Length: 264
Image (cartoon, rainbow, N blue to C red; front, side, top):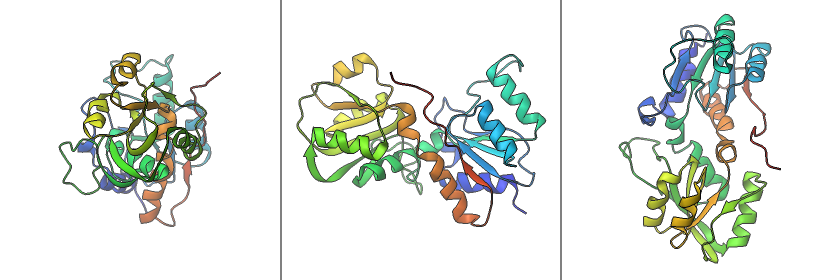
């Protein structure tokens, strides 16, 4: 018998909850973790469709990257999106758990995966942070080097291929060759100064503001790849972490929803 708390403990061994950022709400969102786990459904963002799929597939644990509740709520309003999800999850005895910025900060989490996909070597934290001496810590960003220096155009083509990107938004920095690459999955513009300090040729992240593009233009190439695109692979990594310990456990389902943000 595998309890839900056993699955959660396995995740937190790789990404302890004290690694989450102050603003975050990683961890248990709702439900009884003492119950036997009948299946795990992993997603980036919880939706009615995902909740339906979890119920249909007999999964009573949903692990979402982004928490459905970020801040304290004063009422559960059935007419709201969040209220409907909470009520339906409770009625169907579903546990909801979020592995967000604690997983971002893990070496085998969001940034570690990006580094692997891009092909970076000698990967180190972009900013050490409080927990840099703890096992599996990488931090909110990472930096590494390519096996060999390549042109900016070839690097952008490589990025599109390995991350499945439809578009890359970037500033007008005049650099021609890329070797040293800094990354931060999700909204990472707060680390631009760290990337410059680390002498990165390019900083790859999401949700960059207009003036960040302009202000950093003389010092570094900034490339925005999209929030979903930078975090899309974390679902399979969470499944892999669980599978290593519970190799015969089923079902383990990764949501295959596409990006809900569309480009025209």
